[in-house]
Image 1: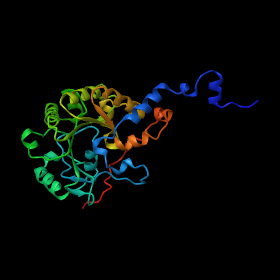
Image 2 (image 1 turned 90 degrees about the vertical axis):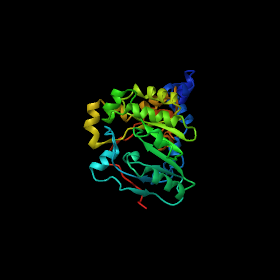
Image 3 (image 1 turned 30 degrees about the horizontal axis):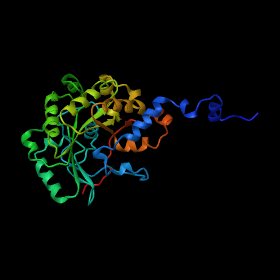
Length: 300
């Protein structure tokens, strides 16, 4: 007797093979294919899956110091391990975009306005991205800055939860920064949120709703990378380590946020997820562990 394939068996039972696929898996696949890449990720080497060793956009590092002490922070880890980059430009000629900055809080530096102007003059064609926790942004400072994209980090929807995650009582200041930037339509604005299941699950859609109400253009929802020096702090805060590695849970969180705002997930992750079939995507797990972040670009 000839052995049937599962497709032939399904049809012999009067059922189309695709119906046997997990409906949620197909929903995840459609969601992934409909998502746009975050503005910050556009032009990044990480979107090209044929590149064997992609590096992030160039950055200008001002300081590794920060007025927050976030329980998940990679920059903190780099400082403790002596691997934080020195101030300066890390990149190449004719960049597509430059981030200020990837380590520390750039608005702490008294040179922020000077460096912003220098980059605009030196690289007039480049998109300038500001990555900040927002707590030090005022109307007065904003008038002196000139960026194309501003990403403000917020991982909680209440003052109490924000304090728990950042060890800083700055929630109101961050919300005010979102209001300042969201109200200025000359720039693209994004709220940058880290997916930390067990810690901020319920907060993510609320952050999305809050940001949208303040005029923010998009939410950049990023997966958590668990650095070894942060493990105990994350465990104490209630992180569900199993779900932190689940692609399915990450995408479901993005789906909830999309009810309120133009949500986008980490670009290099999205590029990979688009290549997966529905069932692989549904069951996929990402390697979320690391020891220390690495700066793969040279200081120029």
